[in-house]
Image (cartoon, rainbow, N blue to C red; front, side, top):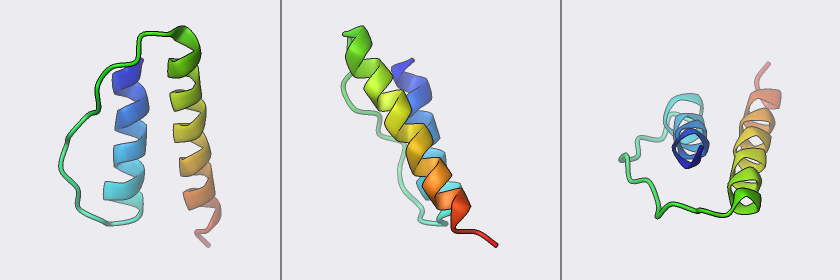
Length: 54
């Protein structure tokens, strides 16, 4: 799930915002609550980006 959260954030920056960044996932989070926070933030960031498009 860590990988999915990072991938969502990476695609938001790399594809949606057109800012080329390297693939450098952070250290894994093992607590379920930490992973859920990462996923919620990743989806919120994409939603914010997409809502700015016409």
